[in-house]
Length: 125
Image 1 (cartoon, rainbow, N blue to C red):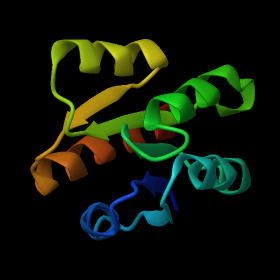
Image 2 (spheres, rainbow, N blue to C red; image 1 turned 180 degrees about the vertical axis):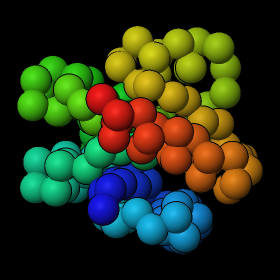
Image 3 (tube, one colour; image 1 turned 45 degrees about the vertical axis):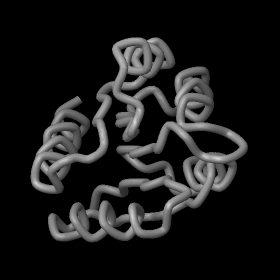
């Protein structure tokens, strides 16, 4: 079973994302901040991390950079989710190492399709 980390400091957003992708049968683990996300990444080794950009403490960008610096996590897909929609924000996400950048508000179906795409890519490679 594919493990997916959902990290967002907004409980309702974690619930929405977790419920949406959980319908596809993924093992969803949740974190409420960047440090908890990092600990779960090290413990659970998810195939996909959905990270809110604006979390307290370590941001989603910070966690993304940490993931990309760790060779043992090279196969993990990182999808940033954010209300920050300016071109510079998206570029900062990709510069940090994100594979995908999803802006809020988003379509739950579109987000689930994005997760399925990355899960299948990671299963192939």
